[in-house]
Length: 135
Image (cartoon, rainbow, N blue to C red):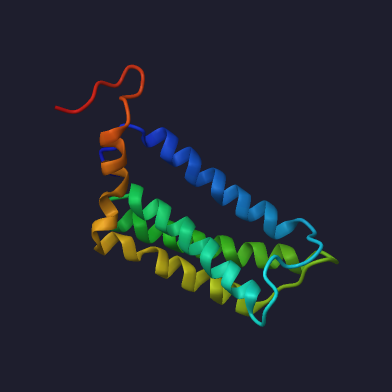
């Protein structure tokens, strides 16, 4: 993991977002928020790209990043399986494909200057209680 002073907060935000994805994918929704062909695939892709992208900003170890990526891809498949068990959702391979592609796109910040975004943000924030700022 990166040497982030606010790491517990960043992790809580990331896992809260992951939980939000699970909840919104499993509750009945009245209608799609976007209304064009394949709009739900765009929602899947963007949700998982943001999720993986967030953790890509936090994690440093390539092995750990791969594990998270595989875990999020498995999460997408698990959600699709659970949706197939409901009478108000359905299992769709294309949704899982969009989830998986989103995870791969979310890894892009690792190879860019965006990977330093949280470090730059933390330089503007006060140090957490009991955690002195770096020299």
